[in-house]
Length: 531
Image (cartoon, rainbow, N blue to C red; front, side, top):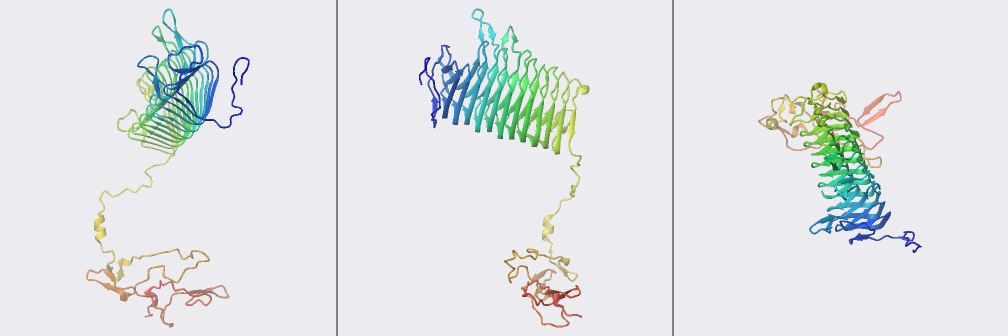
């Protein structure tokens, strides 16, 4: 609707949002740009079903940007830059200039896909002196990036990612992600960095890098990708990284890290996951000159590290190694996978392992080995500077109850060749027996009693047996059990049970109260005459 100063837009009467695709460059303010972009000088909101930023198009804001895509937000592709032969990628960018803080980026979508160069940036830049050309660092702070994707976030290649950075005296913005599944592959990154900028040969950034918080309800999978918070300034600190999920997978040279290569402190890495799988993957907190960074893994059901994977808080130079605290039901390490908090010219860190059900395949050592999985907290300065390794595991001997096999191999073929039915000492198979229990004597149901047909293997009588020359027994035919006439000199199998008036119990050859069922399991010896 028109107003005195222009137009006012709203979604008040909109019921169904359609797709939005940005493919043309638009200049919305006076500031010139070196790349095709939509330049915004005020807050902007984009709302649709599927929103696509493609072919190198960019949205650049100095205030807040909010995008609501009920289905999918896709940022992807490259396009030509104004300079001949140059290309730019599709991006959403919040930037801070001079003393003006950068705006925040809010994204709400069912799915977020960043591919083929697609990226989301929050950046604190600087400017150059018009006379000297020297870099003038900005003092503003970067804006925060908040992403809520109900289904998944997929970042697919090395030119794509989510980035928060500062090149001046301002702090980098924070990155917060909430989704169901997060996938980062093939060199893609999520990073919050304080990179600094050189002035008279020295880095000038002196503040904190941004923090990264990721809550993925089902899974976080890094397949060659990375999540990092780093700094290299004179005194700035790296931000913390915190991950919460059911299943964390760090695969194929992927890394989750907090680090500093300057005088600042490395951040802390915190992981809350039920299942953690590192396969050629790395968790690290590294420092060169500043204070240590720590790694904490809490309340995991299982932690599996294999194929040269590593959890480390190693320190370079005179820095102190960080602490590692791992709490998991089971910890297993395979194929030269290590947990280390080592130092060069400083004190090594402290490693604490809490495992309710045990630790497999890895143990503390006084040095790393290329052929075993090791836990080390050692300093190159000497043993007095080594760190502490603490194991809190059940006091159980893992070798207890194990039967030691004979060193002489068993000849299974010889055993199989034996005649196990040979007739010796008046007995078949040396008195062995073959028993079929069936259902244990119980009827299938109260309404479905056992029928009259045989449910067991019948006995063979002695007349049915033939002893061959080698002593083996052959059953020539199967005979049906014969019910002999009653006689005082016969032993018959009990068929009934009677309780007398005095409470005594008598077994009888017939049961007058029920219909007899012939089970067919009468043993032939039960009909032998008394001698």
